[in-house]
Length: 325
Image (cartoon, rainbow, N blue to C red; front, side, top):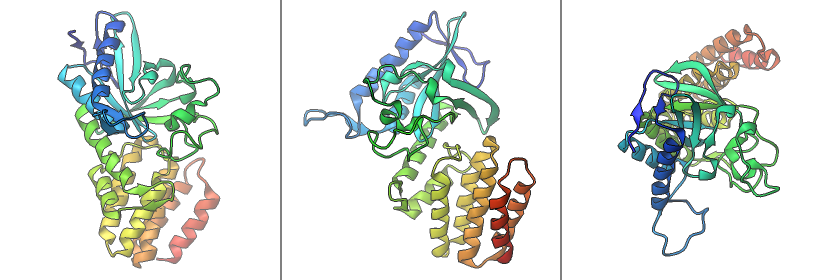
């Protein structure tokens, strides 16, 4: 099927087709091919005659994107709360429908108009949107199974990469931040995030490989995909910079801090600056270099001038920083 491209609408350029049903078929045909090549790690039933390669959402999404590009089918890679998927805007001349095509979980293929709200921000060739998980259709789920039990990325209550069938019964998130990448960049970024995730242990909250974790963050400098500050990533980055500082890699600790928090500018959340200052204060405490405490104090002071800042907590952090100068 030939799909023509129209390029004048952001954040997602529509795929212009004779009818939306044909476009859906084009995407699902690619998904079928992907699922003939990959299986979901060790979560799917498997036997010795299954020659498919194990993969997670990153592998499924990257391969889907590559095959879509081969067919000149326009799409974007979406990344939300640790989960990678495909997002496309389908247009038949009379209708515009924003769709999610999830090759890892094809039952989640759906029109997400009701769950998707673009942000008026474009940066570094990225676009951003809000996803409202309670509006993601999950009618196909077995009776009595909470959506977050099967799709943990829909909630922020527990670490994203824990086992998908335990611990997610506290309700869906009200809103998640979705980062949208053009295909080539998106594939590179989600693979970098995969390297980062493999270097940390979310369950035990420890760093498994400081060198790999820090390098992955540097490789994603300014474009770390998971920009929802409510995730556990800021806490892990603080652990990473502390470990680097203990190894006398102070400059690298600073570079990792800058690389990570520079990605969060579009979120416009005061906690971004606060957590960045926390990292600088940790570097200063371990290294004995007062200039980092001074920078942290300046950030805390600036944040305290903003509406809705947590003044009480910041006052204590500011006092500690000033005592280190």
